[in-house]
Length: 192
Image (tube, rainbow, N blue to C red; front, side):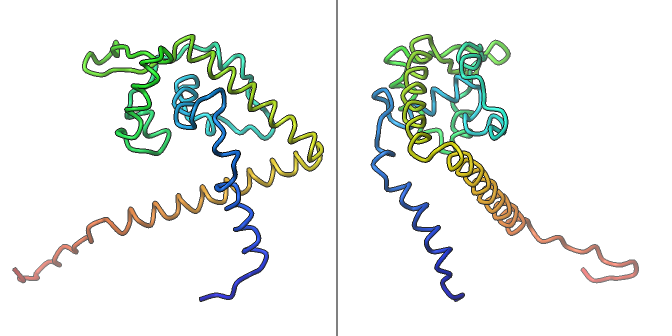
């Protein structure tokens, strides 16, 4: 085992604190994380964290809020959130019961159902976004603009690093699962 690098260890523990932080338990506008993420996926037609490179061009939230999307299938929402469909189905059902999402038939495939966000769902996302922005405005005041910009840049680099690591691991696992290729016998080889 390689020696423990104290800088790497400090970085690990700093990142682990974010998973344990009380702020992760906060429910923006009274909604849990999965509910907000499903609504955000439906609002944007994609995972909200993967829409674009925000470092130099933050998205215009109002234009996203008012765009119409054809909705997503449950399997598409699950894939965007990187969870299995049975995890998301009860969340969608609860949001539907509250009138925040609705099911519509896919016009191109009558067997498929699409989930779309309603105006009430958009209002929840707007309120949650305003609440989250108030928190991050306070963070910028706390850190200062220069440190905030540096932190944003560093976090983007961290995301890129870990995303590349996972992609490499996924490729390695895909190659491990491939059946070994058998060589064709050479001409004249009469082996059965």
